Image (tube, rainbow, N blue to C red; front, top):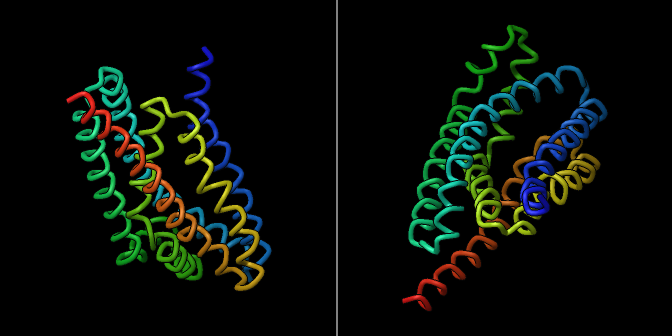
Length: 218
């Protein structure tokens, strides 16, 4: 039971942090925007579009977990690496598709939600800023779930908290003080970029460790 709870803490913290972040973003937009209601509605549209692609990636990671966990326990490290590479590849394809839609046809997407021109303009701006580093989100989500799959609880929890709690919340507090409403929008892609760098570093060390195990076994 202790092991189950420890591994389950990672997705638990992700959901708690996500709720807290939404509260802070809404408060920031209401405080720093000239029209807080429009800005919050624009964030709602942009966030929902991103979440469609994130949900697909989460489905991939949930499918990856039992395969990686089983083969890692069986010391079939080549299968672990193959599954990880395949999941990262498709997750990146999916989030890149979301990036293309958000950057190049945001107006079409916004008009599916509203006919109000001011909200459409705000949503276009929000989608384009929020999705700057969207292709990296897939990699970060897969890496977090990979550590959960191989039982590296501390690393998984750390990565779960990195983007939301350790990076995004401080950015949401600091950046708007200098650039107003834009600070709220730009906090999100900056947090995506920095959390991806941290995840890549931890994953590199873990893959290196797996490779050394393979060599010693050979």
